[in-house]
Length: 401
Image 1 (cartoon, rainbow, N blue to C red):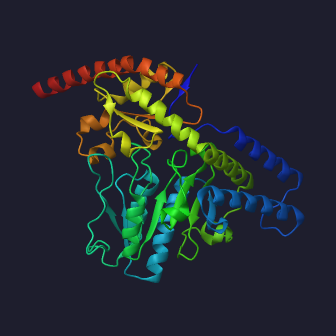
Image 2: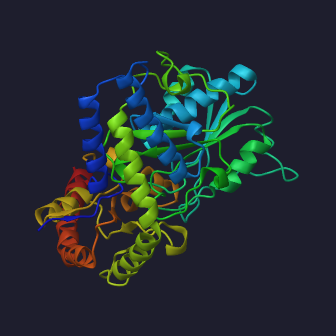
């Protein structure tokens, strides 16, 4: 029987989401209509969409009118960072600086290319040895002096998708606001274990991906405080507050609302169970394997391990042959053997940044799954270590030649 421990990449579709999606599709087929249409079918579709919007808002501690449906967290991140930054610069031409943490998902980090083309400056905050963002120095309790009123937007993920560390988003947002900028956070990895409330976080924008909470892939949410300036680079029919045009995926929105609702209701129990599973895993690790970051600073659902091998492809192959799905890093890096930029930013060597493994838990993870992983771990490490020796020998021959 296979074991799935890669929930930070994607988590299985929840039954409630499948039922909501199927029911919505049947209703839409029986009474077709674009939500923008004025006839009875359009009005029905619009009502379904707005009911889903209200439910999502309630789950995220936001007003329903702040909820913008997207195709997923990647699009939400792109809109949340760049549309808001453009809007701020449109109000004040001096605001051309975007500041992000060094632990952002590629969906945020790669906006640097877009920002550069559009004439924005880009600043990345350093990461400390424990995998937590270092906040900028303040002057007289205010904003960082080097920002000096130039900040358009700051972005900091709430939980690192790779190493699982919890970031000081609230304090970061306060410093961003002190300089007059907007604050954005990707909370996709936090919802299952943390009490995520848009109102209490103190940020202006929040991104969520549906498939990280058991909804179908292809639907997500950007929560954007009303009244903030946003300029999209993809104008169209004016859907979703004219920020994300395109005919909405009504069934996807209904499925996301159902999945989020169940995730939030199960959160206390899952947070408790994931802590127990994490503790069980960490207390039974073989010699030479250790947690990359401290337990107190990390999400209970993401366990990042440092291994005594720098051949992650061999480790992953061994687990795959044992029918156990784990990851060497974030899913967007899967299939490419390269050192973790985040681990290197923590001050680790390139070799150490290669020898890492991410185990991530979901609502259906059991102790038996963890035991299966622990049982397969020693042989997976041996598989990597055997290639370490081959690589070392080749390097020695190359040096002699």
